[in-house]
Length: 333
Ligand code: KG4
Ligand code: ZN
Image (cartoon, helix red, strand yellow):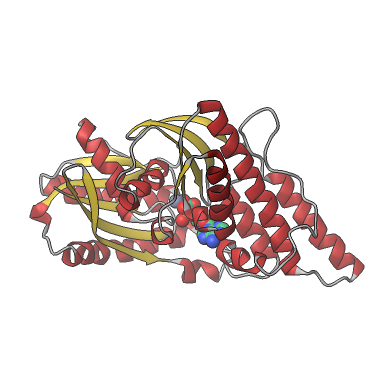
């Protein structure tokens, strides 16, 4: 069975075809049109521009996904679309396109939660992965710990009370002059600096598995401003290394706390920030020490993409959770 997955929650328009056979999910195509270059001019995503760019890309991206998979619309057994959370105008483009395509062609439609999609990317890269496991989702908009109790069945045991880790990386990246989104550039720069150079407050809250990134963001901004006032040139490599280390250490601490609390033997990392080399290495080390299996999708499946939406959509299809004509987009979780 072929599933067409559609994603348009933020600044990537993506369509993908995956094939489900004998419980195995395989990617046949995964086409992504990124708007990053457009938004870079403004230092961040401009929602109105994002919606317009999705409209321009969605038809051709879908056609390309079908052609690359070497199938036609009549071969598609299910259309899966991100309905929430995300930018409302951006989501509406994908949702209305997918609804039209599905209902005009009598194809079942399923609604997918973007975060569940990120977690499902791991089923594509690690076909032997089965629930239960502990999941850490770290993206531009989310930083959460979930117990994955079944396919698309989650119980949140930790999360951010304010900003997300990706947003924290992007913000400081921007202030030190890196192009949007700063996460990947900061990751690279951090390899060349001293992680002990600057002391930052931990984003890991005590006595819970929650996070707060507003304090570390403010501390970094204060550090930058006070160095500027003193006329001292900022060592951006040391800043990147120290800032990254504080964030990574906090995520590892809470993930380890989640493993201890639940006794689970597998940890899955996903979301755009899962591409971070320091985070991948640190979680792998902690899991190795604890004898826990560490699973992280390849970097190509960490950012927003249609394949992860198709994978999550497949589980909705299997459960018979079909979307009807009243299906709508929602900005919230
Ligand atoms: O999951 P995603 O593509 O979009 C959302 O759902 O938010 O995540 C995007 C986030 C951005 O904040 C971006 O800077 C961050 O992922 N990111 C990284 C890296 N690559 C992407 N953050 C840290 N290190 C990276 N290598
Ligand atoms: Zn995402």
